[in-house]
Length: 412
View 1 (cartoon, rainbow, N blue to C red):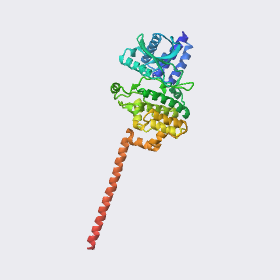
View 2: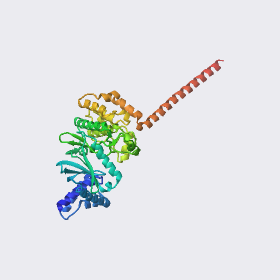
View 3: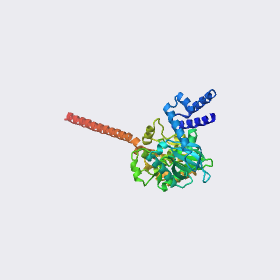
View 4: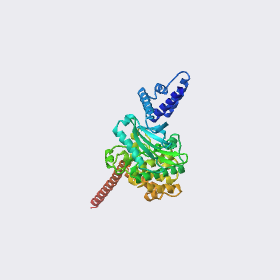
């Protein structure tokens, strides 16, 4: 019984952290206290967390209900043996499972019943599976099947034994330039394949990039993927910001209709920035403030934070993260040329053909939203100074003419 409680508590705590209800440190504190209390009497982790004020009673009840639902869902998908939970997000839970017919390991994403009863969520869920099924690339998590059973919608995909970039970044890792380049190049190849198939990922971020022990990289989660030709979907999403605040492209924030592969290049650039500096490009307490900075604040060059970076890799990241998409690489093929060049110790010619770093920053100052007001103010100030100079000249000329006239009158 104690072992079952411990297992339940572990899942409960992990879910509380994943849903952002408490921090890792708060969970560790709660677990430590739980171990002390278990020596005296049966105690549940949720009771400790509520008592400490880390979660509320209602949050505890919701987590308890969600865990119960997960357990039920895990036994209602025919043909698969659920082995354990891999993780969860805002809308779905991912399990490790064995596909009995082929005796292979898979990952199954399950949409909770409360979402499975909503046609809109179900349609979006199946669209993710259909989008992933169009892709067949070594650097993309492969889709196997989608279906419904026992009131639950599920999506079966390739099981990747490894970890996400987020796992390392959350632990404080700063990637060496060479390692980061190797990873980013593989993700770029994955994106090139997706774009060639007419799909934009729209949520490139560390949590959606997995690495194996052999060094292979996998791009995952097509939940926000959209076909470039799907005008109806684009129009229905107009004005809405789809993506993750720390890595979202400015045009996604504005909810523009004509989103293309350059949005993914920006997301990959933001991820690249985080990998080599150990910090996200723009930080704020509120997600809306983070997105506002993507729109308006000048990017601190990565080599100003990590001075061991080469000028080339810093330059590539800045071009990837240009606020105006016309100033970025026009496609992933261009990006890969520069990434490979920097990887080989050469100059990123594509970046240089547009502008050197100083010119690039000046252009950013001139065309992006953040600097428009500043430029306007500088222009007004310049005009004001010119007006003062002209008026001074006119006054000086007038004074001179008066003096000449007075001298002429005196001489008469």
